[in-house]
Image (cartoon, rainbow, N blue to C red; front, side, top):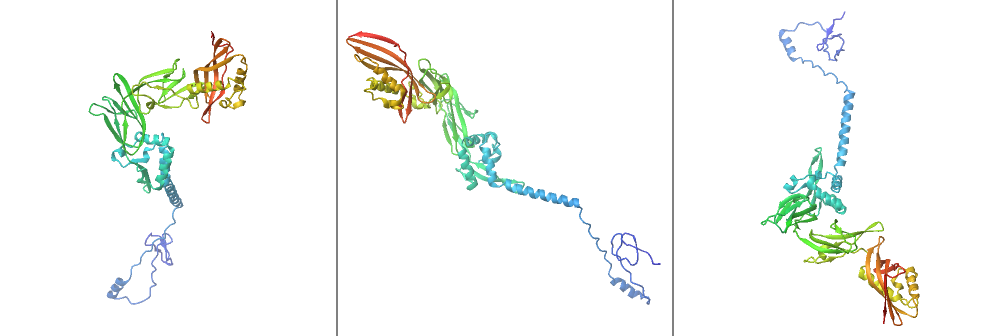
Length: 465
């Protein structure tokens, strides 16, 4: 019976022929078979003990990695790789510029996160309020926004005001960019003391006898509204202007002045000054404007209801029309509309050239369609009906109204005096014509229709020569 042995590492029973422990895999030392020999001397036994190498226990083979751990590691690698690829695409400089421009052209977007400044003071003020004027400008000037985008993607700078600069990193890897903007300043001046100065409805200063100006800034370039408000000679005056502020310093004159003038035109026409209604023209054809605040660019126009449509006149620069003493008269005109003087001259010429009837008429060129115009032919028939034994004169004596038409041109009402001579008698009749249409074609005014009148005159007088 063989002698049992035990593993020196785990203590499990092993047979003499086992080279490795069947339990833990430890390599077993195989003892050499004993051979009869003489017992070694004490000295040689000690030497053998000293020179015999010690057995080294081998490492156990590594177990395979857990599959769940491998899947976890693989998923992490995929996520990291996907995130890197996404970030590399999202943070491309041109795509960052595109997001910047999109925000700058949308007044409701958060553009402040894309903006910085080379001015330390302005840089500390970057927020939705300070950046808003820049958004207001670019949202109204999309062509300038396109130029800015192209320049930033190309050279990286625009108009010596905007430049693309790196501002840290995203995810510690991808460069993040912002638009660096050069600061602007505005010099506000007024002409009176105790005048309040405003920037976009926020008071920035009050003038005094010693200081009639205020330097405002640093500001981001953009569209701003500045206003001065105060009492002058017992009347409250304001001066308000909206300007586009660039990178250079801008001077804004907010002097308080007043203007007085008279607007003439069609009764009932509504008059606007800088898009604000200031009144209606009365039955006499006038609207008096007294001590109105002069606000830089003062633009006036009138509107009228014609055939259910609102017709707007051409815009007039008031300062170009009003004299220093305020005695000026302003008459809004409608595009393509004949004036009273022009209408009277055209109608008088037409009647003069047709009063001889169809045989001597030379006024067809004054009508739309010339000889084919029905109103022209009716006028010839009218004069042909006059008696051959009398003579006559025709006078367009008065233009009573000129009203713009909804489809262009004007509707004219006017008075005509007919004087008939027969034997020793002179008879004068006046008729009022309404609904005459005069239009403009290729720069010339032409008659579309001469209008209609009643069968009975407004009045009639007979004189004996």
